[in-house]
Structure formats: structure tokens, C-alpha cells
Amino acid sequence: MIFKNQYEDIKRMAEDIYHHPELGYKEERTKQKVIAYLKQLNPDIQLEEFSTTGFRTTLGDSSKELHVAFIAELDAVYAPSHMYADKATGAAHNCGHYTQVAIALALYSYLVNSKAYDHFDYKISFIFVPAEEYLDLAYRDELMKQNKITHYGGKPEAMKLGVFDDIDAGICVHAIGGEFAKRTINTNCDLAGFLYKRYTFIGKASHAGFDPFSSVNAYSMSTLFNVAVGLSRQQLKDSEKVRINPIVMNSDMSTNVIPNGITVGTDLRTLSVDYMKEAAGRLDDAAKGSALALQGDVEISTQMGYLPFSQNRYLSSFVKEAFKNTQDIGVLLDEDSISAAGDIGDLSYMLPCIQIGYSGFTGTIHGDDFIDIDPEFIYEIFPRFLAQVFEKMNGALDRTRLYKRSYEEYAQLIQEIICEEEGRHHEEK
Figure 1 (cartoon, rainbow, N blue to C red):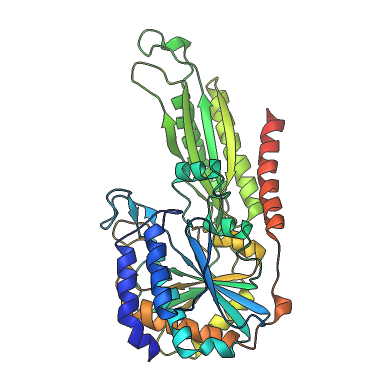
Figure 2 (cartoon, helix red, strand yellow):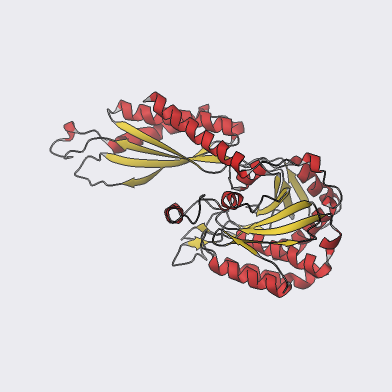
């Protein structure tokens, strides 16, 4: 009855957040609304704040050794054409993060009111993280210059700050795009990781009408590069879910001057780090070949995005066990990898994580028409199901099947990937 009784309040919170979207590291209003709601539920709550807008709170006796985190993401996407976008900032909640926050509040409310967490053999922390979406990078660059953050992504930043140092396992949830005939959840849906590549093509300017013969056209190099990328796609493995999306990032062109510089940027998504490196080499070769073919040059830079996310199959087994006992959810989708990415991949390098998907939406994720259409499922039935997952984990988590790495090990891996890319560029010059 607790989930049913709190449903309207949780739904109102979700709708409020949906209609007041904020970009990463800027989620000030969202943070204050959530904290106020948590304090209303539990006046004695202890909060730990981190990285501008992040915070966490813990339920359970400190003597309990095992520690599970339920993670919710606070930020919105930059989508100014969305039907409910913030007109000033272009932010819109068309990735479903607003429902994650509401689900976390529904679970917290249930646990506080029922005292169910008292009999768990583990502590449970609710961690609200900023800036999952990889965007608004100029603003985040400024935060870095001010030494306010080190990472673009909220979870790597929290990792660096020690927020996850005492956590043994992480549970996240995420909206599934598209409509389903039956209420649906998914598990073991692995995500791609990505690199962010910049190719600056360098040519030679001249008057486009009077003396185009003396020029080297940087825009033409970028065009040739796009053609090369298109033709190379058949050589990329389908099993790796490779995605490439080159865009013109900046240029200074006019129709009467042959352009001498243009920058093309693209993310490169794959399901494994090793193939990410191989595909990056193919992209770099296409850029260098395109520049060489037109007597120009290209400068290449590589920036790490997020690591691939391989869901922990052991933790997912508790989701499957809970699903066997539910009558309210019609379908469990399993083992379906996709090319979307998230900083949950970075956290999963440090500790075992799962991300449980849930239906209840219409429109395309990150699209202009994305919105929930089954709030009862999202804010009442699905949180009740998650409570059953917590019950299944109680007394059954085997610490020997949970791994732990340090932030320093994570940082070393990221540095090795970048250094390997930069080293290859240097050797080939």
C-alpha cells in the first residue's frame, strides 16, 4: 500500500522536474527540490554533497559491511526544439532522467516508512549524480579551469571525489525508448563506450574567383573525409555496434575565399575498448588520406568519452529472480546490447553495476516528442518491483563475486587509452 499511497506525490515531483529541466552541473533547482522532499520524508536525514550539484544519503546501520548504491541522474539533455524545452537554456528532459529521480524518491520513501532497510544485511545509499549527458562542454571546460571539476561526466567526477569508495555494488535504472504492448523491463543491456575525435583540416586560402589555383581547400578535405567514413562503414564489425557521426564543429568561411581551416568532430562508439582503438585508427587514416589527397594537412586530437558498460550478470540474476515472482510486469528483455553510452560504464570499471530498463514512454529518446505515458507503472509498479530486487539481494550477496578497483586504476586506464592514441599520431607524422 505504501507505493500506492505515495504515488500522486511522486508523480507530481516527476512532473515538476520534467517541466524545469537543467543541464549538467547546473541542476540547482532540481537539487533543492529533491533535498526538500527527502527532508520532508526524513527530518533526520544526513546528506553528503559533492561536485556542485551531487549529493548522497545512506540508510542502514554503519556496522553493516556490505554497501549497495541506488544511483539517479539529475541532468537534462540540450534539445531546444523539444516541446517542453527551457526556452532560455535549451534543456529538455527527453532522456527520462526525471523519472529516475522520482523512482529513487519512491524507493527512499518506501524504505523510510516501512523501515524495511533495518533487516537488510547491507547499507543502501541513494546517490544523485549530475552531468551524465556528455554535452555543454564549453561550460564544463570553464569549470575545469576554475578547478571545480576534473571530469565532464558526473560519475567519474564522483569517483574521483571518493563518493563510491565504500560502495560494493551499483544499481541504476533507465527509460527504454519506444512504446511496448506490455509493461516491460530489460536487463543485461550492454552499452557502448566512446572516444571524441577532432580533425582540423589545414589548407591554404586564396581568392575563390581570381586565384583558386593557388589554394588548398580545407573544406574539400573534410568532404572527402566524410565520403571515406561512409565507404568504410561496411568494414566495421556489426557485433561492435559501431557508431560514427561527423559534424562540422567550427569554420570561418565565405563564398569568395577558399577555406584554409575547418574542424570536424565525431564521437566513435564501440562495445569494447580494443575495437575502439582499432576503429579510431581507421578514422585517423581516412582523415590523413583525405588531407594528403588534396595537398593539405590535418591535426588530430582525441578525448576520452565514456568506457563501455558491460552489465554485471551476477547482480542481474537478482532482477531475474524478482521478475519470476511479479504479476505486474509482462516482459523481461535480456541480453540486448545497444550503441547508447553512459558514464555508468566508467563506474562499472570500479565496481559491479547494473542498469535496469523500464518502459512507459512514447516518442524517441532525445527526440522532440519524448514523454511518459504510463506513470502508474513508472512511479508505483516499477519501484515496488525494485524493492523486491532489494529483498532478493538481502542475505544473498556473495562478496567474493564482487570486484573493486580504485579511482587511480581507472584514471590510469583512461590515460593509457589517450596516450596510445596520441603516441600513434606522433609516430605516424
